[in-house]
Image (cartoon, rainbow, N blue to C red; front, side):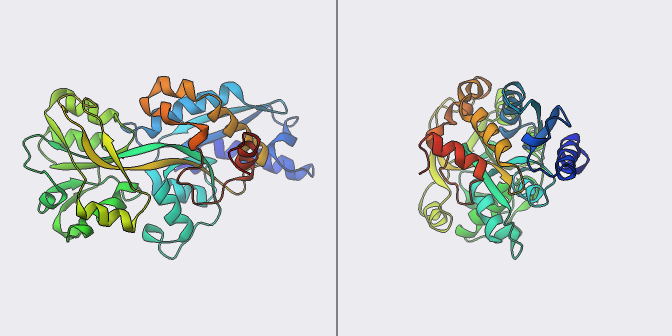
Length: 331
């Protein structure tokens, strides 16, 4: 649980000092503490959230000071989008990565958040499209979602975006979770099980190429199952956040042709209680250092100020909004 991390403790202590001297915001407590901790909840180490979050944390730590207070940022492994949204809702972390559709559901209180809307969620900005990858062994005989019936399938943890996606995919093919043998392994754990023959398929939503899938393809013949056709079009009508996408040939070893699939944009989010000046500073650090992100992972090249508000349906944090207005992205 992030509640034990130093970032939460130091951030709260800064706020307490602010209250004691009758001011608000991190910028006003620089004389009381020369360092402020800021955490980013990401995902498992086998995905894309974690390496990009690590570089973003480094960018923030290297570039952000607020009235003399050094901002020390850290990327923390997490249980992906649903869990990250709930952490933000409880104020147990300063920021987090999450899929656009999950943040929308969380704010509205639907799907995995049924009846429990998280109204304090705020967007910092959009990152990159996450590619939906249904990964199987090349000789598995699985060529479509309908072929998953009776098979073992990993959809990630119940706190992940692909957990909801699996339900949606099965539904449009006339099936339910009862028709598959479900596994809740992380990306890295699921590919190890595929290697050992203990898992038939893993549904992975992440920036491609994904580290765990690279690892699998380097030693095994794999196939990325296409997600295309009338059923997928039906899904897109129900869930417009899923856009059609192409996984280019050569993304993974042995993948010799393009694969038609889906993608959903990743969003960097925070909560309403974070100070405006702090969120302004980290937003500026991200979008003015995107070239560096691209050196860490190919998906980093797709983070741009021009797409900063794409797929953002929850309110934008005032600090980020200030930056976007300065740059002409928002009016």
